[in-house]
Image 1 (cartoon, helix red, strand yellow):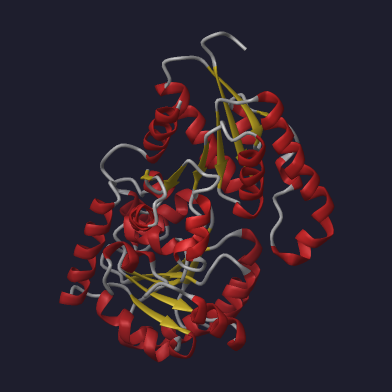
Image 2 (cartoon, helix red, strand yellow):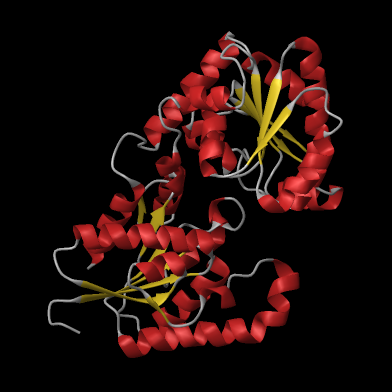
Length: 385
């Protein structure tokens, strides 16, 4: 290693972490006053930027007990391999990125064996929602947390954890000016035609529980709004299920794919009917008024809602610290109830104007028009170097 070179070790465990890591690497190189060398664990995007991954990230990019259990021996070997790399190579800093089931096991072991190496956690595990005691435990092995959401930084600081709000990557995926009009023209939807954005989820179980309820909302809304059109951005593995479900809907449905079509649909829609999840933040940043739905098997839904330590499952409401977006969970997730919340958002009403004003406040709190999340994250890492 060159005398003035700094060694940054990064550990990502899945595709989203690989994208975050790649953006961070670009920003680190752009801001650093000294040359940087990268090592650790990452995917193709991080490798393009010079990271020498010590093993294929695909070895650990698994989800759910059915995938994880058969691969546990390999996963534990990869944990110890990553720890050994840190202990032997003595990087100047370690950044673990998302995938807490893997990355935090690595971080704890590095902290025990090489306590002088500062460890940064990029993307806070959902401790604010589920296991708040875990946040306090992080102080033992994490030097600094880079938070994607402003209330995460407030919460961590309240329990004594050093945390810097850097912003959510969704900030960098906003629709461009004019993309809504282009989308409508491309799909033959007039500028005055009411357009509903339906987002029943990106996982099969989500879609199975919500798509027929969403169909009931659409059919009822179509009776009240002649000419209504519907657009559904769909990822490939749920598209066949959605295509089959919408065959019986009363109105034409455009099923679109790809990031550009999705952003165009966001910009073109009057309002959205969305499954609970990160997509609600993307809608908020794109200024799309919405209602939010969540439904699961009775016992799963009861358990999930009973252990929540937060007043809402909608990120907009948590950022604003007040109930702005209406959420319909479990037994309240019915076509009639969802329609009641959605109806005033599809027209120019006081409710719609208030919703858009709240979304503008979310954008301001998240620094949409300021420095990029990658740039903020890089500065927070370099401060420790």
